[in-house]
Length: 137
Image 1 (cartoon, rainbow, N blue to C red):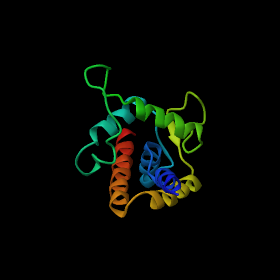
Image 2: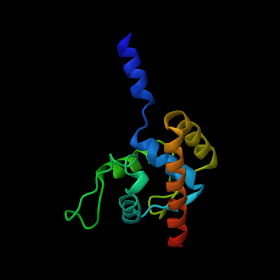
Image 3: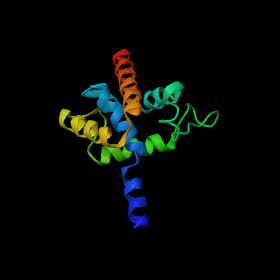
Image 4: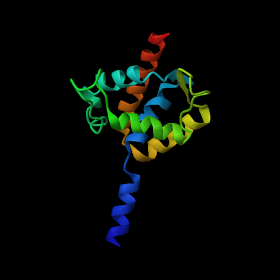
């Protein structure tokens, strides 16, 4: 019986994919940058203050790569893309897309997996992501 409870708790625990997908969904953007430098930069710079705990699993290299780089973040982006959460229209496309229906699914799942405090932080990060992308255009 205990093993089932442990497994159930583990399956409900938010994953790094849940975190990044929720931030993208809460941004409200249909399209956003696919530039890996810009994505890595955004998350490394926003791993501060109230977001530290949520983003703690994303470790960014320093003085090793050309810019702070998280292998986990890159893996999450690939996983979200393979899973159809985010997508590009072509391999050369410079932006990711996220359909409204997928945003709704991600937000529903986020409400099941994150505390209300974490949801507030994810929404703030989503707004920052929106502003960051609008600043890119």
